[in-house]
Length: 379
Image 1 (cartoon, rainbow, N blue to C red):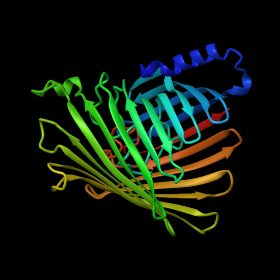
Image 2 (tube, rainbow, N blue to C red):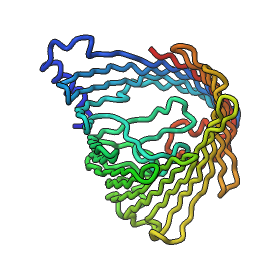
Image 3 (spheres, helix red, strand yellow):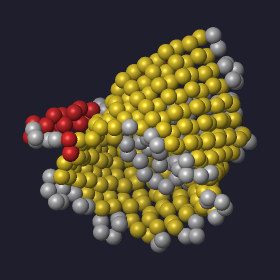
């Protein structure tokens, strides 16, 4: 149902407003070319071409309400070469497809779109519905089929309510996907607090095991999951934030049915040259038998340094440290922007056994060391 809502709404809009003209329509696109190499054994490289054509529609219904529609395709072709084998993968699929009805203090959006929140940027406990990788300069992520309603109070407080349905892929940190035919529901309330804001979030879903894993279980009916989170961000001399999430799954094959994810972070821009922005975070993930019980897991520290060399060039470096395995993850990105063109030259040096972003695409390529070139054309 939600998978078709954007297309149906657009057809309905054209029928109701047959005189819709170019002043309400906008077309744009993004063309991405990339080449990557990883000399670690096995030798791996890839070439890719990706295009995102977008059609946007905006209509002011009156002075208080407006209608918006966004439809974007993801068209890509990627050539992989691993040792002596090679593979070509090409596909066209929807990337975004949503409609929204908005007023002065509310917004209701339905279809295939992105839902994300929280203040952490490098290691995010609240990465519940997206898979954004901080190493990706474009911050691309698959959307979810959902209805999202948001109401904004005059004191800057806001309330979110969402309903997800028909999502059969894993999202965020999920290991097992949601049941495609059962709804997911949740909400978030965000309040002004001291010099910033504080928020509480809840989400419920029913998960399903993949076929290979289910064959080893006596109970193959899946599981239910409740997520609870609190997060806050405060502006002092520097920016400070925290995110804490607790996940409970009624699994019958383990006693560790709770997951704790915690992040604390800060950012500051030093008055050095053109301004050196520094972001630092500490992240902990644990599995445990009880909410406050002793757990087992991993701990990561992360730091991002970003420095604009001039108005068209920027240099960024991201370093992670795995306190559990005593490993460093290193990533550097040099960008050059000229009108509609953006060039990214990236290099990485990581452990062979990648411990972070297990569900984010291209993680195998970022194992070991290598480089990637990306060219973006926006029109």
